[in-house]
Image: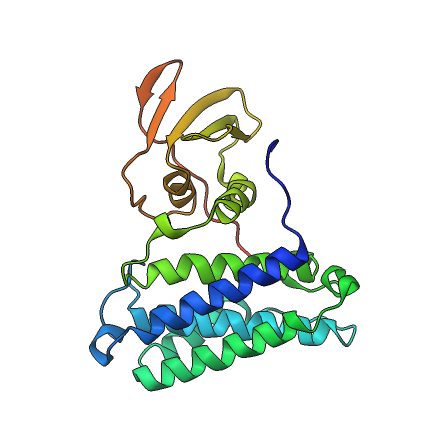
Length: 248
């Protein structure tokens, strides 16, 4: 992953504030009818996306609140099934309810991250068996990607270079065994993910490559895949790395 710089806590905090502002702004553009219309996620309305944004923001805030007391707690009550049930129960809320829930959850999460001192970013949390910094990165991903999923005209082409480069790193887990992807964003250094012997070059605009890795529609139409100098189909990806285990 040469050429990419790990984000610092201060920079991540600034990105979280920006992402929260975007979510609030996009939610503010919606009408009552928009809430029940489809999002870009199969089977989910915009109401489902808003419910999830509120849910993950509250869940990550709770991770930090418990961490501040030297305790850990599961991300969602009831695990993945609890998360899904909560989203379904809240998806049909009115626009006013959704905005209030999202605003309150974002405020709670930002308050928790704002209160951290330097050591606080390294305190353990239950999410992925990691630390608070990992939770901040996760919330950044959720806010930025799902703001695009709301389908209000702000797509992956709006994603920043630091965010796209973070996705290259985090989503390297989606490269199948035995394969290696050479990501070649236009005008930027190549990035190699995966450790297999079978190599595929994925070239195009930075945001299109990141969108494809994230399972979203590349909005600039620039992607091209090649292997041994021949054009090939874009390779299949493994599932998104799960942060909440489903019950057995």
